[in-house]
Image (tube, rainbow, N blue to C red):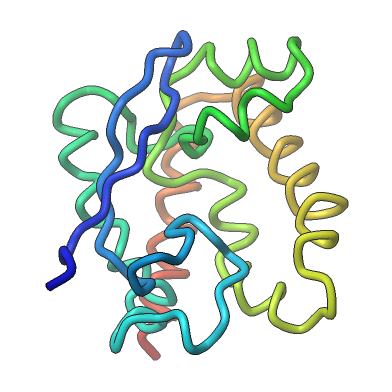
Length: 164
């Protein structure tokens, strides 16, 4: 029997690794962090859990432990951090990762975008990932209480809209 949760080692503030928990949305043997999943790779309710972001709820544990904040750049795996230029890596790791971010709001339906192209990996690495990095850098340079409130509000609207 497969586990209801899966864990992923992520890199937090100052490069400190931590375990991030999510609800399992993909079948055993599938890259659990993949935005490139095929229809047959989802668990019975996996697509719904991802669309509504319910799979992200266990991350509240990381929030309560102080490993992440409510708003900030999303926590990345070490393999994703390693490929970034040092100046960008240093800036991204200077703040706690967040449960939500400008990039998360902007690419709320990322999987749907990627499903529409023949080469989703190429689109992701050429357009989506660079845009996410720009949004994260903008957030880091301009972070303040009002911006956090705006991101939280936009996230709330997107999540509620995903149920409609």
